[in-house]
Amino acid sequence: MHPRLPLPEASDGDDLEGFLAWLREAIPQVAHYGIHSPAWDATTLHWQVALDANLNDKGTGFGGALAAETTLLGWCWTTLWLRARGRAQDVVIAEGQQRFLAPVTTDYHMQCFPLEADGIARLEASLAEKGRGRITLVQRVYCGDTLCMEAQGSYAVLK
Image 1: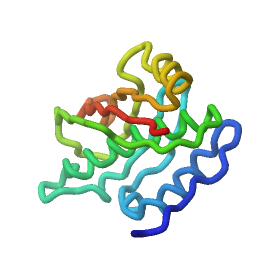
Image 2 (image 1 turned 45 degrees about the vertical axis):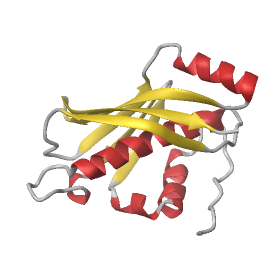
Image 3 (image 1 turned 30 degrees about the vertical axis):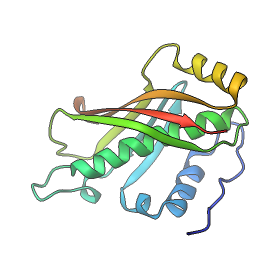
């Protein structure tokens, strides 16, 4: 078993570039995805991704890499949301699904946000009552304005 790399201390308006640097060290595969320029606006986490790091044999985005990146984006959303509230809890994906809608042919951008309008409020209530909870998040992959992939994941916040 490999040693766990603890998260860096959270700060007001979490340092997203610092978080991404930690992520590349904690999960070595992340360093190969070409993720850059993370941004957080209210309830949506965004990042940019270089296609050349994620090519398949057809010269388009590799589905396995896209699936891993959407799963990771949801984990990051949940982890950053918890950090903003001063909570240091483990997050795992409980279930996920993807729909591939169009080929990824250029560098792309991804976004992640709660599926349900009351998802955050329900997670907050569950954390307050039980110390754990779940939230379902949507992740979208775009080439320009074209939606290429949509994924959903149920993320569990452990006690």
